[in-house]
Image (cartoon, rainbow, N blue to C red; front, side, top):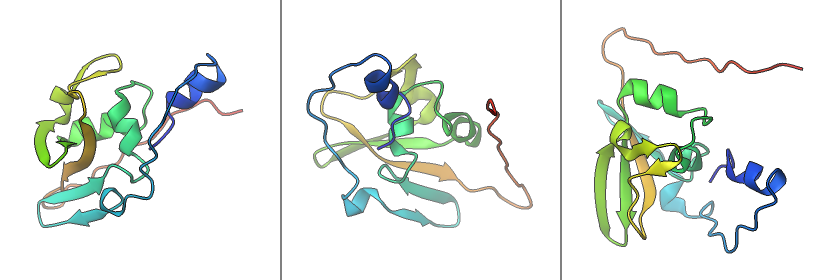
Length: 125
């Protein structure tokens, strides 16, 4: 999901991406849920690909990192959970193992009267 960098690879660098797997119709990956402590966001919700890409130009990473989010990785029936700051190893490098994909994100919910806001600053023309 998403096209933060991949779209630029195609339109600016004219890369041939080969076969691409579209996950936008996978119901289990399109869910959003919560309990008292955690907001759970499926990878096919609009920010999923943005997180899996590992690019610093992604909109959601700074806020998710500040909130202490975790990423749930899946390969077949096997899952593992990593803090988002441990998932990113460098520029566009992640801790994804061969065959793994981002399944969900767990974001701690603010407690008490804490409010969290984030703003995107961008060039306006």
